[in-house]
Length: 257
Image (cartoon, rainbow, N blue to C red; front, side, top):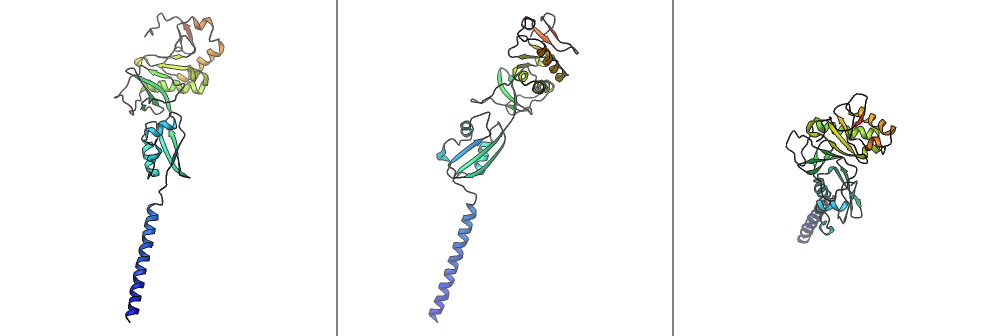
């Protein structure tokens, strides 16, 4: 009887141990189901900054610090960067994590108190971070701001909307013209003046009907040689008058500033 009782106790004990081990294994497997050992992080979709710059800003440049990192932690770190619209993180196998970036679209460089900033296509002000790669971005100068100007603030008013319309009209009209826009001077609310690289005289766009004026400007460029004495010897090109373009001297324009 004692032996049979001991066998039952031993059997019950072994069953408890077996169940405990099973519960532990299930819990451990569940806890680590989404854990991956990260040895390499690959940045994709970056244009404004290099892969190294994005990793440095997220404190992910040192591979020795990857131990224990989860995908959500990697996403949270990189997602803080002001240039990014969206971040997708996926485990690609072989201890590699792919980070797919969607960057904000930079429309222009804007000047405030002599300091340059980026302005995105939805009028968000972004800091210019060292190492940023950009080209063919026009500069918007002498803008009037309706609220406090600071990085990550939004600045949208009539003048900036007009500047964006000029940029858009140039892109839709002629890619070469678009790339040659060097400055859009909003003149603190006055008539807008646009400067094009490779062209001596500035172009007075004024306000309103900007798409129409851009088309007239393209027609004028097609009709004359940019290097002709007519353009080179003039002080301005004026698009403010309906269906007409004036090329002449600056006396009497009131646009000396």
